[in-house]
Image (cartoon, rainbow, N blue to C red):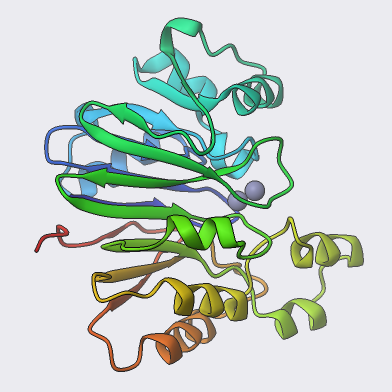
Length: 259
Ligand SMILES: [Zn+2]
Ligand SMILES: [Zn+2]
């Protein structure tokens, strides 16, 4: 299994998972042109993309949905509520013929992959994260959550690769110049995951099987890559887990997950 973060952050998110023949995108918050350019920059063909799985309806996750519906034939994986909210938010119609209905907690067989959406706490109608199992390897993409719940931790056991939000440093956010209401939203139980909360969750799910961790959705205003990295390194010290950071402006591709 190949993983790439095509973009990650508050200005647009897009993750790509591939088995070498087909690619599943998780979220499309950057333009279709950028998706093509970044895939091709990594030596991958946009022609391999078969489907787009949505996590929730915020624009940094679905901004390219309209263009994707018009210009591609990709299937759209989403829960019923997220489909409706995405249609309203972007003024688009996701035709039934292109929609693969998801339900949080229910695994789906997609082209031989096991795709499991699961609920997390975030201020959207039906937000989910994804655990994807392909060819005996398990990966999860978990961003946009206000706090680590037991349910989330349960779904992150025995992973090979974990892509996990490290949104902000609490002190930087508190002392920064965001308006009070926005600070409160980010810090709330349905906001975004702090470095400290990320580290706490990582400690709960770190297993001998885990080979890689990608820190994602870092705030450009309220975090510093070193702070996020240090928080994760504290937890991963003494392990062989490889730590990476996903970026807003340039893609990150990992070597294939293998035994
Ligand atoms: Zn987001
Ligand atoms: Zn969000």
